[in-house]
Image (cartoon, rainbow, N blue to C red; front, side, top):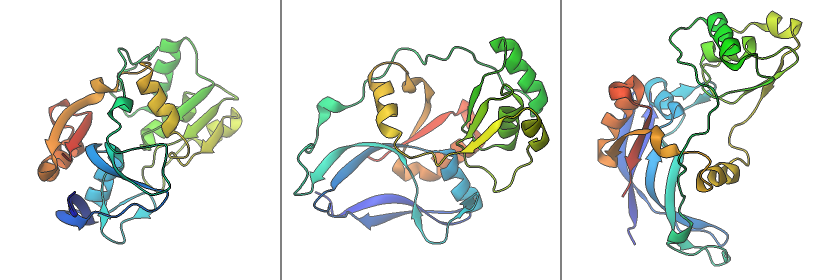
Length: 234
């Protein structure tokens, strides 16, 4: 097995480097994963172009990439439920995404978009999940949620955004925060493996790890209709 691993590391704003880092040994209760594919998240682009996302600031060199998939390469001595290369458990993809309604967003006017939501759905939802962190999207989430409903803020964007607090208070819209990575992987993997969603349709571009600069630039600009940009680590 290789003793070092090529990694995309952000040091500061606009400072992305490719460097080899040592492959760690798994602890007694850990497994070592051999990365196969990694998707570029909006937060990765923000760390690269801004050196931060919200109040999460790059203070030391940080390996980018948390939307990853791979196989078990080595197991710690106490691990009994997994073994290297467990290929039979790889995810199966679904045939359809399963969305009931869609809206093409072509404006930053949150009030207009909220009206579109109401018209398309035949009413406002009582539960809204905002996943981008963009100010317009947060405003839309509040304005487009039914009175007495709940909006959950999942996405991380700027540290401060302008939102219609009076509207939320007057209509008793409950605004809740969520640290997005708590206990959600099993449910997400099950949805993909069961065929309820088709994530393949979201992948528009693929690059080798050595092409990390080009991959991140594509993700940043949306060039070529980019939605989800993947980096191959193999």
